[in-house]
Length: 205
Image (cartoon, rainbow, N blue to C red; front, side, top):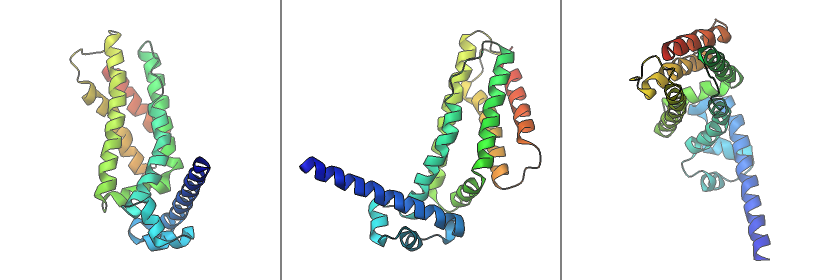
């Protein structure tokens, strides 16, 4: 009986949390980060002001942080693809497709990314979390650089894996924000090709 009650309590909590997040998504997209408030989120979720804080103690920053984590899961999926190339040509094709997928997601989530960009200027919590997300991408790409080194195909054995990883990630991140802010007129596939070529042919001998 105790277990059944506990499970019911957990389920109610999960439903309440989902209602808050769903309501918050509407509020954030309508108002932006600055004008969004916990009161508006609670009203949209049809729940109490205190209930929002019981789930998200840091208020609207933590609510948006959870939304950001969910959306970035799509981007992590791109980065987590197993590195399979056996030569420079295969590596270019692999890298090109990954950058295409990454920038395509920027178009899919453009409105949210623009909102995150706005929030970074107002929230240390969100800005710090983005720095952690960036580090996660750098670490993942660094492992691919190390694979190329182990294969004996790296142009310079003394390359720093993190520096080379940044040569791929940071241009991609730059264009992610350019897409989010509506500043890109060039096809993102052409951008991906340039980034992949410079990275791949600089990495491989």
